[in-house]
Amino acid sequence: MLHGNAVIGQSGGPTAAINASLAGVIRGALAAECIDKIWGAFNGVEGMLSGRMCDLRAILSCEDELELLSHTPAAALGSCRRKLSASGEGEDYERLFKMFAENNIRYFFYIGGNDSMDTVAKVTSYAEKIGYKLRVMGVPKTIDNDVCGTDHTPGYGSAAKYIAASVQEILRDCAVYTVKAVTIVEIMGRDAGWLTAAAGLPRLRYGIAPDYIYLPERTFDLDSFTTDVMAALERRPNIVIAASEGLRLADGTYVGECAQSGACDAFGHRYLAGTAKVLEQAVKEKIGCKTRSVELNILQRCASHIASETDLREASMIGRAAVEFAISGETGKMMGFERVSDEPYRVAARCGDIKKIANLIRKMPDEFINADGNNVTDECLRYIEPLVMGEPKLAYEGGLPKHFIIPR
Image (cartoon, rainbow, N blue to C red; front, side):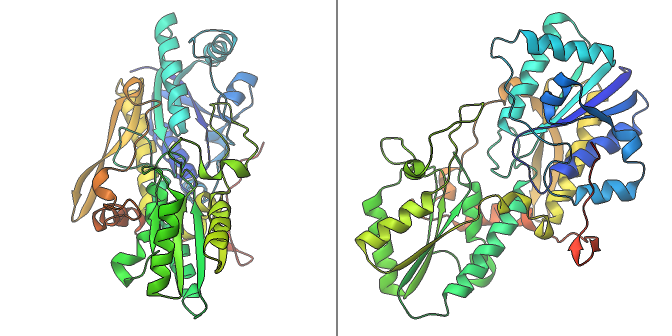
C-alpha cells in the first residue's frame, strides 16, 4: 500500500454530475488510511502547475456538504483545457512533478473527458519514465458520451434527461398551431450523436418525438434534408427537427462552420454552434414556411435541477471506486461502467488501460441509426432510457436550488 497525499482535478466542459464524481473521490480518499491530505487543484493541471490548491478534507467536513456538492452544477474546482506537451517531457512535466514531490503526492485523480484522459496517459508515462511512485486514475465525465472503455459516461444521463424533457416540451408547444412551421433544435455533439439521439426518448413513453434526428455519424446532405422537411410538412402542419452541432457535409466541413470564427481550443477543436441557424435559413430559402431555430447550448450541461438521479449515483460510485482501485495498486487506468444487465438495469465499476482509451472517440453504433440516416432506432432509446431515471431531492433556499461553493 502506497502512503502519501492525493490531488484531485477537474478538466474540460462541466456537467451536472462532475461534482458528484468529485464527492465520490473525496469519500473514497477520506476512507483510505493510506491517504493523508486531500488536495483540490483549482482549474485542473493549471492549478497544479501554479500551486493553486485547497485542502478538501478541511473544506468538506461532513456528509451533508458532500451531498450538496453532488447536486451542484459546473466544476466546483474550476476547469481548464491545458494540453501537456505531446513529447512527454519539458517544463510543464518538471514543474508538475516537482509539486508532487514537494507535497508528497502519491495519488492523482483527474476527472474529465477525452482530452483529460490524454493528460492522465501523459502523466502516467512521465511518472514511469522518471521512476516516481504515483497512482494515476482517470475518472471519466462528458455529456457527449463519446469516451471509449465504458458503457456510458457520468454526465451523459443528466444531459440526456434535460434534452429529452426540453424537446418534449417544445413538441407540445409547437403542436398548438395549424400554420406550417419548422422548428430546428440544435444539440451538442461534435463527433458523436449520443446527445442528439436523446431527443427521441419521448417516443418510448408518449409516442411523440422529433420528425427527424440528424447525427454526426452520417454525412449531411442539404438536398436530402429539404426533401425530408417537405415530406414531413405533407403529413402535419408543424414539425420539429433535432440536429447535432457536429453535422458535416460530404467534404468534411461542418454545416455550422460558416457561422463561426474558425477559432480552436488548445486541443485543436473548432468552436461549434450555428448549425440550426444555417438550417433555418435553408428552409426559409427553399421552402418558405415559418421557421425558427433553438440552440440548447450550455443548458444541456448545467441544468442540475433536472439531473438524473441514476447519473449522480453512478458518478459518485465511480469516483469512489477510482480511489479503491488506486490504493489496491492500479495506476494508468480510467474508470468505466460495465452494464451487467438491462432488466433490471445494473452496472459495475471497472477500469481499463488509459493508453488504450485516451484520444479515441466512441461513436453511435450503426444499429442505433435508422436506414435513412435521419433518425434513431428504438434499440437506441432503450439503451439511453435507464440512464435518465430518477429525480434527485434538492435543497432549496429562497425558492432556488442551493449549491455548494468551494472557497478560493
